[in-house]
Length: 117
Length: 114
Image: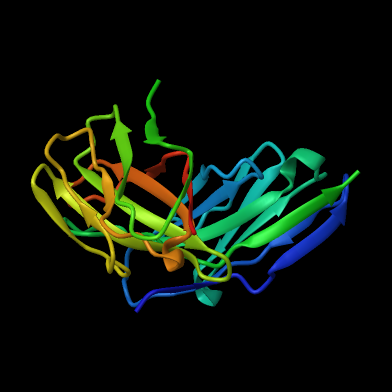
């Protein structure tokens, strides 16, 4: 069975600090996708990134970066120079990569990030 | 603009009063799905649909119904809502096929059942 663990329930940082959100996953699939979604206080789910299991290259997008390590089954998310607008709940999720049937996203329980000015 | 829409965004109702939450997408996606989000439990799938007239249960289907008469719409029906269905509900869609694409979510519907 697939499982995603986000051990950090809540994190609080001061603006401009760097912060890393941890995500550890379990799956028996050899090919799979990992995702990060952001849920701001307004409640919607905003897609941030999708990473293929066969591509371990780290990715950077502005202040956001993701570190995928298959050896430790981790897909961590780092925000550099955090801002108040980064305050949100962040979800890590997992799905199969190839399946013509139902492929529900398996979500972690989320990490609530508070950035204090 | 490509999007998934849900209505209503907020709903307060009473036990037993039937309600429908609508979901519509304009991306011609075959696959649609409903999730509920509860504190400490994350998001869990309620029902999904692979295409028109093809629906099936997810992980937590009890107390819910769905229909898929048109490709773009996937309403969630609560025939007799109960307080334990108080939750935040999300509709999602993606293209289907062997290659799994990213799911895009609607804005959410916050339901309170008194």
